[in-house]
Picture 1 (cartoon, rainbow, N blue to C red):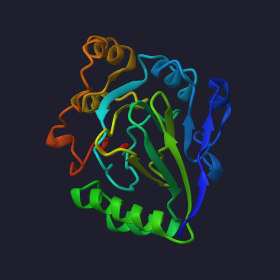
Picture 2: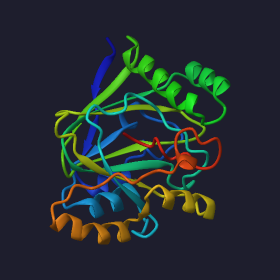
Picture 3: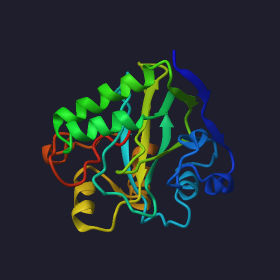
Length: 244
């Protein structure tokens, strides 16, 4: 059995802005994953998770959660994120889920990088295989917490590591819920075009377009991702597996 620890829960925006774990190059394991319970919606969470950013610089994507999650894994970004904000945020719209996170050992990270230097379809599956090994290892420190509606999650995501293994599993597979995935991308037109193809929009625009759907009580739809932006894409910004 892995060693289990609770994920830190932040309840004040100022506290989230002060925590260094998702910003510093050297991680305190107690801060490798942060849950937030700030209340007052997605905007308050986004501005706290990305200090000094504006709503039009933060990009969001509406998603429905799959019934059992996608398994433990880590992400490859190919330098697609802003160097000032090398992390992702998730605002949970609906559904309660269990979040697990752990640091991938250096030896496994080196082995993965040697075997899969490119983000191919095979590498996409391998990230889940390596992730399962880490979360189930007896020596692993696994941080777990419950993410309920109107809560958020922050995870460091650096192309050069350390790799953060994470898994998000709905507590009720019949009502898995939905979430907004949040990032600040690199200011590069190819990256921005790729995000647009995946359904990402500046957060202020995304929220404006979501208002009519919310009034009609329609569930958010997962944008269709063209094959060139899917996990087997061999170049460019691989954002397809940011978070389940």
